Image 1 (spheres, rainbow, N blue to C red):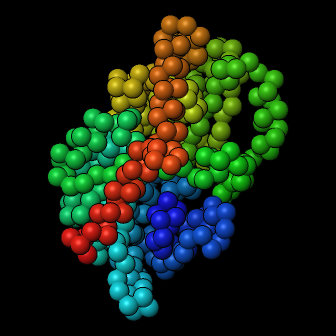
Image 2: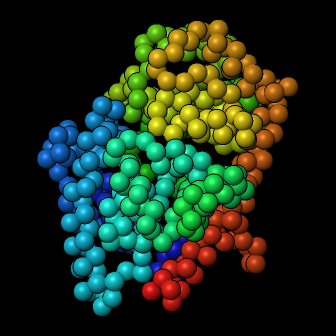
Image 3: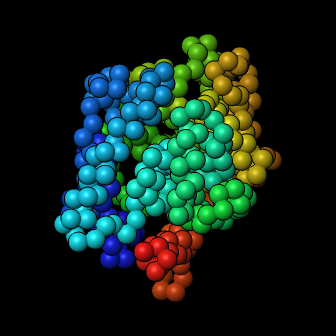
Length: 360
């Protein structure tokens, strides 16, 4: 949308169900042109109507990645249609870093995680080796991060790639930036108003927010220890569990992320690197444990909750640092006259690079 405001036509291309989700996120149906790429999940050994990881068991992740290779021909066909209709090819093609095959079409690769976590993918899993190698043939990379927050990660990524890297974060739904209550995709299991009324009855900085996804799984014993620790802490909490996988969780055990500290529980992929950065570099998190193989107790859970939520000492220090990071995120999207945040500056530089004679 930021690129479109500068007079450029933007056309996200994705599979049909993902396009439905994208369309529901647009405040105006005509804001951005959406293109569907034909896809049938059952042809790739996946359950019916599965086109992303939301309802996909972790054991099927590899099949989903491999299925993306089938999108090359439809994407080539789409670009040919655009070229025929417009009389010239698109200025650039921006792809996810895991879709390295797009660089047969090219030009810009996009990674949805930060610079630090992106580095972890360079050397893991057979699927990613050829895809990452192809992505490194891009003319540049776009990263969902902020220069002020990840200077070291961006420095290392630029040195490794020897390519331009544009930090265009934070990439958030427009509604979250404007305070709108418009929600994309699925509705929550509880009314937002009811949740807010309950929160209004609680003291500030007293409620713990726990959010899990649906890609990884913790053991029943770990979930019981987590519940026991929450009860022993005496803190009020909101535990968000996405149906239909009641015990399937993904990523980090986090205590909110909007200017508040976090408790990390990395389970897979680059999450351990992300938590390491949050704990050691940013100082806004405490790591509870990692992987599904560890044994935790309710006492361990209670201890880290007390550290993070205490009003003095380390808890207070982490809160202050989290507020600083939240301020950097808000500043990144600033555009008031000549005052431009890092996201706006990066977008300006990216557009200049795309329009430069060399790029053409």
